[in-house]
Image (cartoon, rainbow, N blue to C red; front, side, top):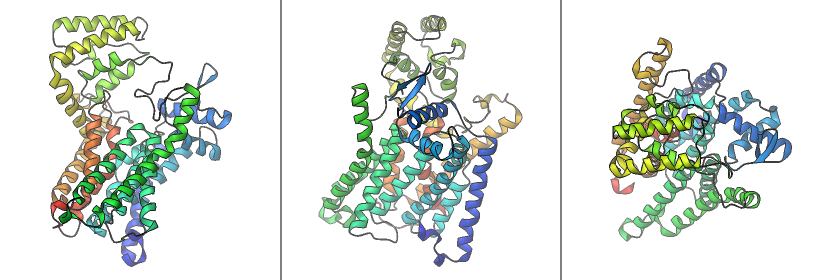
Length: 479
């Protein structure tokens, strides 16, 4: 990153990064002061961190008793424990301020990634400015959640991978090259320790290295970055760096729970909790947007369900409507899903999947992906998620509309940048990650817009291609 701001760029360019950094900090500090995000998940992470720090037990407090847990990976609780040890237990203000610094670092990583890919300082500066002024990144920097750190390590891993492949001004050799690939793997591992879906980045890097390996087997396509020995060793170092940090966690789960769990359970449940697979599958047969997550999915268990909030696509017939109404009535008696009730939801889900498999496996996942990418990212704000009904407070309705246009602006710029820079070497890695993560998100029954934020380093880099000095003429075969 130092190439971005070294004196050779001139005083004017150095001032650019100074003022852009101050603008980024000012925007994020404003979020911290006026809209700090300390939600239920934040308090759960903090409870684990406090128990870990004070009692040496990685667990949650239940009725005054500390119970070991495997429902959350240890990355974010470890971060909170360090902050709490330095600045006081449950000092969320310190947590958010440190996250602001991480987010500023993410901006520099994105800028370095753009500069290397497009061989353009101008693209790097544009990328930094787009990251600095992005309200979505700033919003989550002010929330005690995993997103900011996850985005930082995603950007770091991608930047190190592009550096390791020899793109940019610096052609690494010897030990430095292999340390770069090990660093890439460790960055991926840090992301996985924060969220299990961080493994998608490992899959993306591995798939791209495999593609280069297969391409390098053709003598006419052989070049230093497609040398099979180089790619195999790079892949081994990335895999080792990504998996090694998970070993202590896996061994701890084997010892404590007698269960092989290298990540965290799919639905973030503990070993003694009922996993409502039937209810979850039924939700996936109709859910398409974030509103349904708030109004139905998150209410289970513990809150009453209103069948009137279900969209018409949740029923294929009047009989299904009556069956669903009965299921909701049975649930509302205790606001709990019993194994018997879960089995009835599973049967209903199976019926709906058999009736319309394309809807379940293709169309609804596609709509969920589109909703996560295009919905106004106001989930941490008081805005009404049903913004399109235009009955919200005028101030928050305006925020929803503006945020929607900002998200669309970033997406359109990224698409235009991709059209311009599609032949740039190394861009394939970013696109593999973008496509794999989007496809994975379509499989979720809870389409939350925040899940696409890990893709924003790629979005911003693609958008910055519009500001590179000249169009790249490299052959598409060198992706």
